[in-house]
Length: 244
Length: 229
Image (tube, rainbow over all chains, first blue to last red; front, top):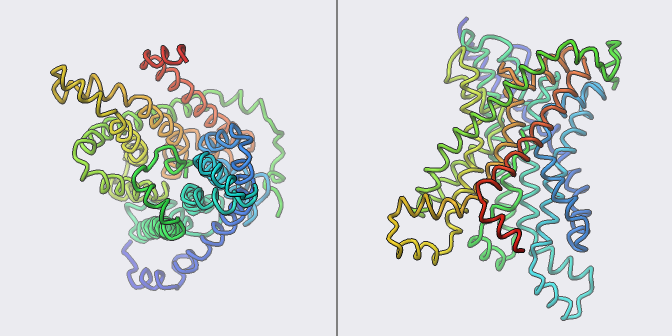
């Protein structure tokens, strides 16, 4: 077998190749699997995280959720979701949503709890009420940690969406699976499929990470930014990749 | 959207299947544990000298953390397949081990570095005043004091690795992921898939508890602190 170079180049720019949709379509499919559950997880996890962090209640639950989440095999969750709910976009959305919630909830909670109690007292002393303390003082100070949680979850969801291909979905896992199903060492076309899928999904994950890191820097108040460059903690959930 | 399970008549949970396949399940569990242990030990062997170097030469810190950070961001399926492309045929297990080791590095380097730089300067000076040379100060003073943070990293790295091992199933490496993918999903056997899932979670919990116990054994002075507190 020789490499179909012309077909390969055309595939990169949009033509189908060996039964696979063009690479741009695969990227869009991939984002269609990954982004809705990531957004839904932000909407679902931030408000309870804020409430728990503001009131200081449920700390044990919030922290343990992240630790438990880390132990959950994402691939297994995905495959079981497909077995239970059938093939389609909903099972992958449900599984990815479940994976994305814990880091966001935990980081929102931790971000609020690590606000200096003196600052909180000062805000109350200035006459701010509970809601105002949360929105005008605690939230801005918690933003870096909160966004780190969103970044962890989103990158993880983009990574895990790749695995949907092993249940027959498309996305950037599809060329990887199709390539691996043949002998990538003997068949240069299969090799090109598998390597292209891997490289594109790797670049996509790194790009999402970079974009969200930039947003994080932009949104972080200047005072907090100065403090954070000094003490880059290990305690945030940033170090926790949950099996993706 | 119809459940895939309607296509078979297997009951759930299918205890007979578990009983009949106990040897396979055991073999895959052992393989899973082996991959995890070797990857974390290799990761420690690489991360410790890197972290020690970065604690001594601060200029190394930013590039080292940025590099391990980027590697950490790459989806594991992609990393396994890219490594496989270089490793060549028949080396899937080695490929998986290299990939898994790479993923432990960010966590282990970062935590070891934080542990080492967190040692109070007074303590360092006291060791110097007692005539400790750098190597001895590192081994007898700084590393023991950094141990709780290092162990926190080892715990996160171990639990994370147990989950990542599952993904190496797609390049054909035997582990509990086989119960979820080939034996579970592909044969529409919910019992197999859930058995694999539960065993992976159990492994993670047991490994974490063992590491907590290990940390307590290794840091007897902390126990005195705990009792005093």
